[in-house]
Image 1 (spheres, rainbow, N blue to C red):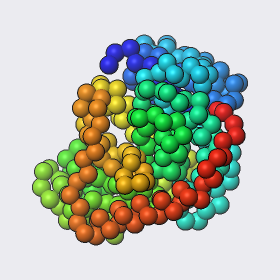
Image 2: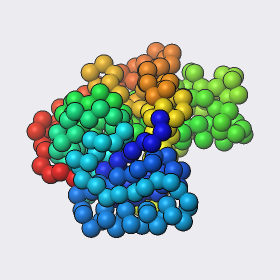
Image 3: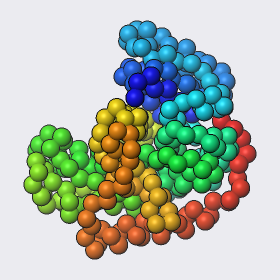
Length: 301
């Protein structure tokens, strides 16, 4: 696709980092930045315009309103409401009740949107389902498991002392405490490999905390995952991304194969243990979704 128009909802840490990446990569021809804080979005748009000129990027950046998003080819939702996350477990789920109202309001206003919607807002699996059900949009994907998979391949490359490009493997299920490592189908340079599952799982859980402790919030990794997924969903590249998408009656991370912008689920063969872990993640997400009130919409971004 040429002449792509991309919208970003949310001008916080992730939205700013993602917007800068889109401008420097010149992925879209036009970038619309939308936020419920007008002064912030005007300031960010001006800053990005400066970046585009300095970097000789062809991307035109404009502040926008929610209604303008209907003219986009893809919309990335990275909004975050103000709340204090006191959760000690299932930390990414801590914002479910706080973020659901804004997601629901935005979903109502984007009903009928025919492009791709990428959800970054946590808890991403629950928010992707909420947005899809309220908006009725057909192409909604959650960013989360693909970032987990990137981290997994980096760790496995370190263990195997190889370039990460030689590692093939997925992390699926919940973007959270119930992520499922597909160890049985992981390969290095095309060959099966023994995965130190306990050590890897521990490092995967510790990595987000390491980043948050040092920088306050993960931002570059999610932005990179969005950029990679946008290239595929817009038909600029083919390949696989692990994205939150319908599984049974819930939403969770599944590998999706993109060809010319069209996505098909390609869940790898799972061992009995891996399947049970995936089903346990689905059960937990199903229960968690029932605790989000059905009608919590209150504000538009």
